[in-house]
Length: 122
Image (cartoon, rainbow, N blue to C red):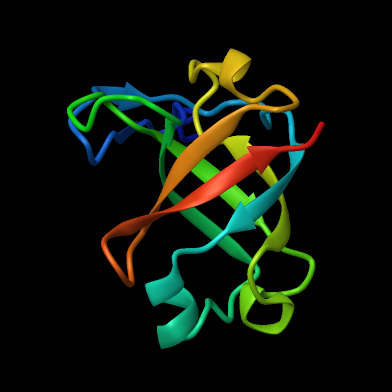
């Protein structure tokens, strides 16, 4: 007997926002990331991709952040600060209007509990 096809599995959002759905890749933008002095002192990341919360510069600390994917051709540890990256939102329903040339975001730094500055270049 033939097994019925399984429906795609949906995952729960770890931040309590409901169910996440598979989505097409969101648009990428070139960015410059200036890390906090403390992060530079401790040593920058030796990875090529991160996903961390980001907020529009000037947002209140109580505002919700959005998960920003940062893709580095060369790890920040080798680039130094500032680092060049391609950035995009993890979620399709994120505020894409934030990622426009000249915009600045604050990116959460896990290592320092501080924030890096992300400048959108294109």
